Each structure stands twice: as structure tokens, then as C-alpha cells.
Image 1 (cartoon, rainbow, N blue to C red):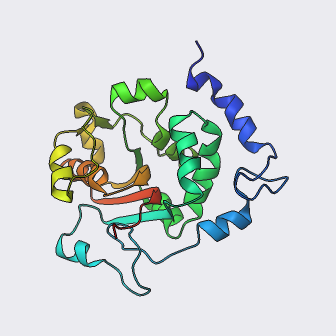
Image 2: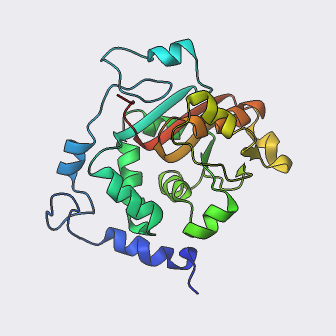
Length: 238
């Protein structure tokens, strides 16, 4: 049985080969051409605490002002809207690892992401519970982190200790309670976080509850500054 790790050199080669843009069908192209990235992932004003859209010139949304999150900064490359949900699903659930490179490039090109990666000490992917990792065969957040900052990425420092029930339909407070105790820092290496600048990487941010819960654990371990970097941010409920 082939492992995802064994196939990584092959999928990395495929990601560099010319192909057809999955959105506009331009040829030759990468999986998403530059024109489609400009059209569907334009720079946008976002809240510095939760990455939701805000009016130009506004630093924090009202909710983050009233209830400051445990993140010092939160950055998103695009809104979770067409064409990104299907592409992310192919990457995340159907094992199409060729998307990791283009998505990492999209993330690095988002405003303020490159400086955050340069200034941080450690890049941590959001971890998966063991059962979920066996089911998927790889952690999509780790694949993104390794392509953005391979020398700084640590795959074993932040742990997911248990799987949690579905979060849909829960309030923010309920989601946070649902995630209590779901993350932990590797106890024998926890001192590595003290006074360090951390970048947390995830693929999709919905309510932010998972990222906030992980950030609280890192803060308790002594992290000095925590920036979340996410590929896609869902729109606020209407």
C-alpha cells in the first residue's frame, strides 16, 4: 500500500508541469492561472483579529473589539466562495495533493503573510486527530505549511488530543466549549514556545473556534505572538 509520503515527490513534479486552469480552462497554466487568482482572490480589507471583511481603514470588527480573540493577527488569502470550495475539497478530502503548491503560493502572496512568515520563529499546522489523519492519509494544513516555510515548520509540537462533534449549528461560545481540551502542546518540548513568535496555518476558517482554542493552548505555553494564516475565510452569516 502506497503512503502519501511516498507519493510526495511524484505529486510535487506534477504540480510543476503545465496544465489547464481549473477555473477558466486556459492552457498552458498552473491549476489556477494568475488571471483567476487576481479575479477570485483579490486583496481585501479584513479584520486583524478574525479575518472577516471590514470597511477600508477599519482595523478590527466590532466583535473582536468587544471580545478580543487570543490571536495577535489573522490573515486570509481569499473568501470561501466559488471557485475555492471545490478545489479545497479536492485537496482536502479527495487526496489531490497537487493543490498544495498552488494554494501555498496563493497564501504567500496574500497581504502581510510573507512578513509574518519571515518574522516568526515557528510555523505550526493545525493538527488532525489520529483517526481523521488515518482517514485522509495526510494533514492538508501541514502540506501548506511545509511549502510556505519548510525550515520553520514543526509538525509535532501542537497536538490534537481528540476528535470533536460537528460544530455546525453551534454558537461561538458553544463551539469553544466543544473544543475545550481538544489541543495540547507536546509536554517534553513545550519550552520551545516560550517567548516565540508563532504562525498557525489552516486551510479554512469558519467560526474561528478551532484556531482560537489552539491559540489559547499556545499562549498558556508562553508564546509571545500568534498569527493565524488561513487559505480561505467563510463569509459572516446573513
